[in-house]
Length: 140
Image (tube, rainbow, N blue to C red; front, side):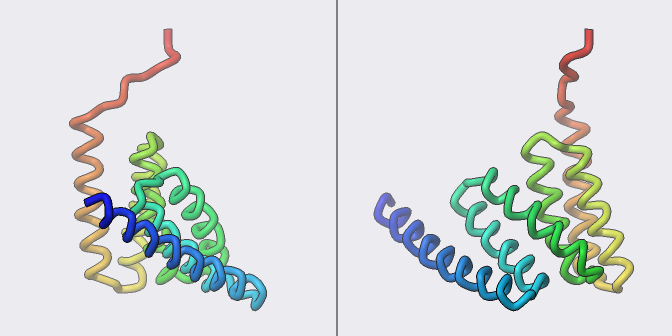
């Protein structure tokens, strides 16, 4: 098992290096959509490596780039993953709002399968939030 994890981590490093090269190429070529999608891919690797913090930072940058493109086919999947990361990092309402925006975007562009998946995700997140309320802190 340890060898397998080591092999997977080595593959992840190799892929990350390739993605970093692609990211630089996209930046040099002024390809914001390519940069956003590459950051999205990099975030997936960080999630696989259980590095949510790094994934969240990558997704914030990816979303910022995607939002400036006015291309919902790019923005929606990025926003959906960012919403999930925000939710699990403790920013539940912000995360839910991001997934809601992605759902609406998918509906707007007629991506019914993706909209259905987002709706299912949103329902699960809302059910989780209801079943697991966060205690309010700092109020006396």
